Image (cartoon, rainbow, N blue to C red; front, side, top):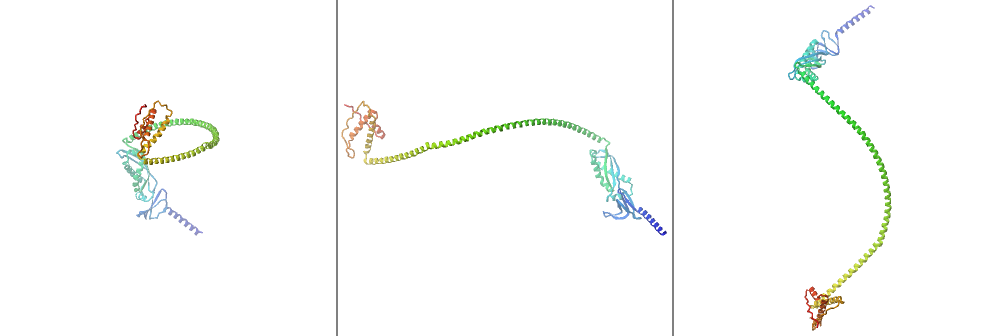
Length: 433
C-alpha cells in the first residue's frame, strides 16, 4: 500500500515538472505575429544561410540553451505624415498632411529584411523610420506634380506616393497598406486662387446648367404641347379617316350595286346583240347565196362569153391582118411586075374610089354653075403597048375634079398631089359656048 502511494506521488511530481518544462519551452504563435527562433542554422530559399527560423501561425518548441525566441508584431502602425513648404512642380511651396498605415511584411524574403533591421527594436522606432521614409518620398512626388494635380486628384497623388515609397519600404521589410491625403494647403494663397477660379468655374457651370435646364424645360414644354396638339390632330385625323372609310364603303356599296345593274343591262344587251348577230349571220349567208346566184354566176357567164367573144374577135383580127398582109404582098408583087406605070394605075384606082365616095355625098346637091371641059383629043397607049385610052381617062378625072371643086370648093388633085409629093395642076376651065 505504501509502495503504491509512493509510485503515484512520483508520477504526479514528474507530470508537474514535465508540464512546467513544456510550458517554458513551447511557444504558440498568434495570427498577427511571427516567432523568430534564433541560434540555429538553416538554408534560406535564396541559398544563403540564416541563423534563425521563422514560425508564422501554429506552435514550436524552443531548443533549451541553444535558441532564443523573439516575437515581431505584424499589426498596422498608423503614421501621421506631414510636410511643410515642400516645393511642387512650378516652384509653389505646399503643405501636405496625410495618414499612412504601415506594417512589418509577413512574407519572405521581405520579412527577412524586417528581422535583420528591426528585431528587438520598439514599434515607436519602427514608426519613426517609416515616417521619415514616407515624408522623403512625399517630397519627391510633390516635385513631379503641379499644385492643380495635387489638389484636384488626391487619389492619383496617393497612388504616385505608394508607387514611389513601395521599393524603399520593402527594402526595410515594411509594407504600406494605405495612404490617405487629408489636406493640401499653401502659404502663398495659390490654392485659394485656384479655389476661387474653380468656384467661378463652378458658378459658371451652374449658370450654364441652370440655363440649359431652363432651355430643356422650355423644349420639353414645347415638345409636350407639340405632342398634345399632334395627339389632337391624330384624333381628328382618325375621326376623318373613319368618316372617309364609311363614305368610301357607302360609295363602294353604291358603286357595286350600280356596277351590278350596269353589268345586268350590258349582259342583257349583249345577249340581244348575240341573238341579233346570229340572225344577221343567217341573213348574210342568205344574201351571199342570193348574190352568188343573181350576180356572181351571171357575171361569171358573161365573163366566159366575153372571153369567148374576145377570143373570136382576136382570131378574126388576126386572120384579117394575115389576109391584109397577103393582099399587100400581092399588091407589092403586082407593082413590081407592072413597072413604071404602076404608080399612075394605083392612083387612078384610088381616085375612082374617092370620086364615088365624094359623088355619093353630093348626089342631092343643086348645081348652079356647070363648067364643060374641052376634049383632050387622041387616045394613047401605055408603055406596054396595051390599048388604054389615057387621054379620055384624064379628061374624065379633070372634069370630075372641076365639078367637085365648083360644088364643094375642094381641089382633089391638088390635095392628092400634096400628100404624094407631086404637084398636079388642073387646066383652066373653058367657058361654055
